[in-house]
Image (cartoon, rainbow, N blue to C red; front, side, top):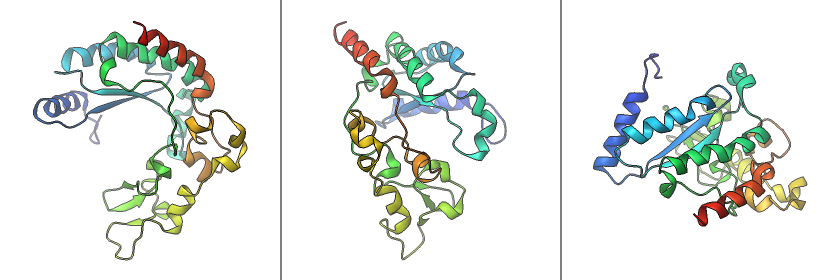
Amino acid sequence: MNKSGEDSFNVIVENINLLLKHTDVHVGIRINIDKNNKQYLRELFETLSNRLISKKVQISFGQVSAFTEACKNVESSCFTTHDFASELLEYHRFVDEFGFREYTPSLYPEQKLCYCCADFVNAVVVDPQGFLYKCWNQVGSRNQSIGNITDKDFHISNYKNARWTERNPIMSKCGNCCLLPICMGGCPYNNIVLNKDYDCDVFKYNLEKVMRENFRLLNN
């Protein structure tokens, strides 16, 4: 739904098809899931399978979370990380069933240096007025901006950016966890802005199932 309250789904599908037909642009479709919409996932995949002119798109799944006060009204419909982890393999089976598997990253865990873009040195979110943020949860909160693209003296390594990039999960309880190289301490927004303890990622709750599923796919 767009800003005017009109249905935007058909427009989005048409624009994806234009990209697939006329460009080499990499297209990714992220499906955000909560307790209210998970029952419609098969219907969505059927629609995408029938209407997209190519299946060369990457499908990923996002866990809806009530990070900010503005989202508190949806908090009751959000999955816990534990519950989302238990459902995630079922969602990925739709990817395989409807033929998107070849173009979608495996669930297989990989080593990484940062959890997400927020704790990369040179990654920022830019709002319509040019204000820069480390996390999209902060957009609109000017006091949390790390600068503006029009600031002549702006430097990406300023102190507001440093509090994100200097986060060190190795020095926390995560330092003794065997999953640290996979999750790197979880969501930095929860830790830095909300002052919560380091988050455990979905792999803590479904790693064995993920490994078994990858073995099954490799042997099909």
